[in-house]
Image 1 (cartoon, helix red, strand yellow):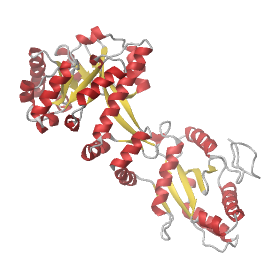
Image 2 (image 1 turned 90 degrees about the vertical axis):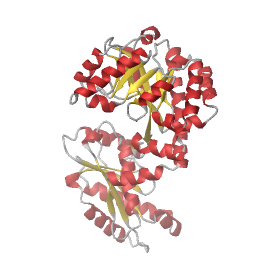
Image 3 (image 1 turned 120 degrees about the horizontal axis):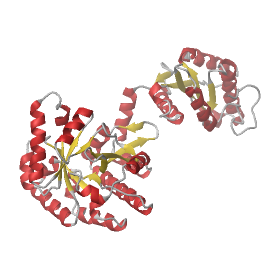
Length: 445
């Protein structure tokens, strides 16, 4: 690892003013440092100078440069080059990667204050810091740049305060700031910035040992907060109406993936997508779905449509009419979370469905309750009589999988076979379980 001592280096890895690492070099070197940490706990620290822009405005820019060099010289002189590295990130931001047992923020800030005072600049200059404690689970998963963003988030909590000069990033802070992202305008920007993507969870026939379909699930990967839980943003999207835009994004991404694989000469399985209840208030819903089929030159069987009981209870007649339209257009219709509500059997009587997806609450109780086993067996037999397929959701154990397989041509969805996967990983898995449309037609979903 390069040391950061002496005069500024004429090297693209080093900042020409301070001689510290540039951001890109720091991210690379910090990644290596954490990889070889041998269990040592580390922190990413972001330091910022108060009123730095004002200093540049009030004084000559040389004064600002002098402050930056003095701070850099302090880091060079005090940090252990074998265990810690430092960087000048942007303007007046510095980043440190330093072991927990070597980090004394109060001393660092006090020392920096004294160094800057020794320059005799007629302006009160203070350093503030935010700290991201590196979690072992982050290693290899969370980029250093996102760790820095989280440290900077912690810094924003105390910047400008005269009582507390540093703060640590924590889950509470993350939740509070995520709540602020849930406004419709912020979600729209996130969609435009390509922060949303789809993951796919394969649906498996345990008897035939093949993938028969998949469900497209939306994921939000924020540049600062990382992966935001769907349990957090989906309810917000439903509340403010953004769910309609988000659903249509997911549908199109699923179609885009199907078209890509077909163009590459690879086999596909149907991908099911969720139709949140607010979509049924859009008169152009059937036309929009048909336009996707035309745009990507797909057949309707390649995109399955999942609805929930809440859509049925909201506007029964409108939903029934819409589902009939979908089926007339050639789409397959699934009822998601079957059994979770009170009207499930009534819905089977009324709704034109092709498949029921049994709520995961049932399978979780399978090993504890004989009644659950009886109910699951009844649901499968009933679905067969009604010429419907069945998917059991939430299968997580070998016992559960074996029991479902004993019921007949029933498909499973759950962590036992696969978690929701990024597109690349999903394609790799699918290529191991080559399946054709003919296989799927008899697969029970």
